[in-house]
Each structure stands twice: as structure tokens, then as C-alpha cells.
Length: 354
Image (cartoon, rainbow, N blue to C red):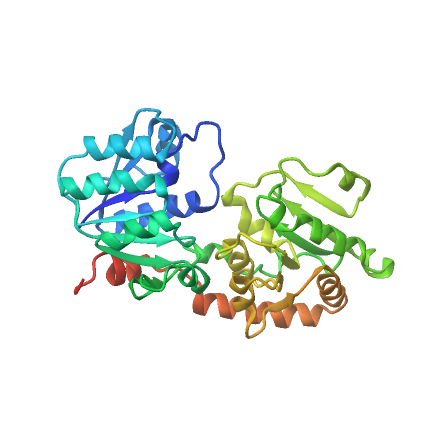
């Protein structure tokens, strides 16, 4: 089984930038594929070389083909399309990125592969959708919301499958690891400099708590590059710098409640599922992709800032409520949102009946 792994992020200039989000998934998924016997070829811009040498294992089934520093997926993809030799049983494409359309068209004309499996973290732009219609495509969306963002004529070709790949790392804390009952620690984790992540909403809700409640709590804002200056005046609001992925499980185990007050932009929320796996109750905004994860419990869907404040107050004052929701959250995450690479390979990449 020979797979060409086309990830837009690896075909972009990456020098000095941090590894986040989808790149963390890629760097876990590729070694899993290799261990299952899939021969994976990864085109990547040369600026990725130090990172990939450090973060990808030295495995005989992994081959990285570097391009010159051409900055964009379009130019690096075209270089790879011309330089790659041989044939692949399939191509895995990491997102319906418009910059990959000309390179993939060229690869198809060259006969490098005859099947494409697209992992869609968002719906396709109209130009990308036009390309998808002419490709030998099977698409896999990360959520029902993303599937619904595909044009109606493409949806029959779109399945839904996604989850946390390293779920076993996010076990709940042992009694020795459990945080003390107070202060009750609320955590918001992500690239919080993005306004849609909802850091301002979380801060306003926390500051509106009654003094008798807030005095027993802390708000932890994790992975802020440039925290707002107004937060320095509040000792009970703790800002954290960017957190490497390997440190996330232990940090989540030190918290009591996870906040996900995103206003837009979320198409899955790995962080939310990681918190659920850790046994944390979740207070989330009413975005469909978040609300669906709490449809049987596991936390509270909050329509606005005041609703978030009310839910925080309730959680702060009732450890049994936190525990009940945490148990449900972990059960739901284990049932719905754990990634199985073998299942993905057998169902989508190399099915017995394509």
C-alpha cells in the first residue's frame, strides 16, 4: 500500500512557526500509517526539514520529499507534482485547499494516483468544489457541520469520521494527580489571541461571578501569545504561554472545568474532546459542532456570556455536579470521538471494495 500524503501545512513556509492543531494530528497519523505497513510519501517544503527530522520517527515506511522554499502550497505542490516519480495506490489530501487544485490536477494527469481521500476540516470554497466534482474522490468530514457545508451534489461522497488520535494519553487523573478541591480551576485552552476563541467572553463571565463564588476560583487562559494588559490586574486570572502538545494532558488533569466559548471557527474542537476524555465537564457555546458533543450531558451549552457565568457559578459550588458531568463527558468521548487509524485505513484509504 503506497500513499501520497498531501498536507497543505507541510507545503507552506514554516520556519520559526509553532506546531499546532492539524499539524499535531499529521505528525501522529503518519507514523501510525507506517506502523500498519503503509508506505507514506510526504512532500514538504525544505523549511520543515528540522521539525520533521525531530518529530517524525526514522521509519522505513516514511519518506519525505522536500521542495525548495517556495512559500505557498501552490508552488511547492507544483514542484512536487513534477518531481515525484512512481505510482501511488491513493493520495490523502489534508483539506480542500484551493492552492492544491493545480498540483493535484497535474498529478492526476501524470497518473501518480487514481484515488483521492480528502480529509475536510471545513467545507470547500466554490472553486475547490468544482475540482472535487472532477476528481476520483472520497471525502471524510470532521463533523456533520462540515459535511453540511459541502454542496448537496457532493454530500453523497462525504462521510464523517474524526477524533483524538492519542486518546489514551488523556486519562482522568489518579487520586494522587487530582487537583485540590479549591480553588476551582476553569481552563480555556487554544490559540487565544484569535478573538473567536472566546477569551473575552470567558473573562467577562468570570469577573461577573459573585465575590463569594469567584473568591474560590481561578480562570486559567492557556496559550496566549500576548495576553491583554487588563488581565494583569486580576490575580485569580492566570495566563499561560503557548503549551506544547505533550504537556496538554497533565495540564488538563490539573483543572476542574473546561471552557469552550468559541463564537465561530470551530469545526470539531480537539481541545474539547481532550478535556472530555480527561473527565472534565465542559461549558461550551451553542455552536452546533460543540453542542452536539453535550447532547446527552457532559457539561452545559451556554447561549451567551450571562449563561456561561451562571453555569460557572453552578459548577464552582457543586463538586458532585462536576463529577457527574465529567463521567458522562468521558463516556461520550470514548464512544464517539476516538480516532482508530486501522479503521480509517480499512474503511476509507484502502477498502476491500473501493
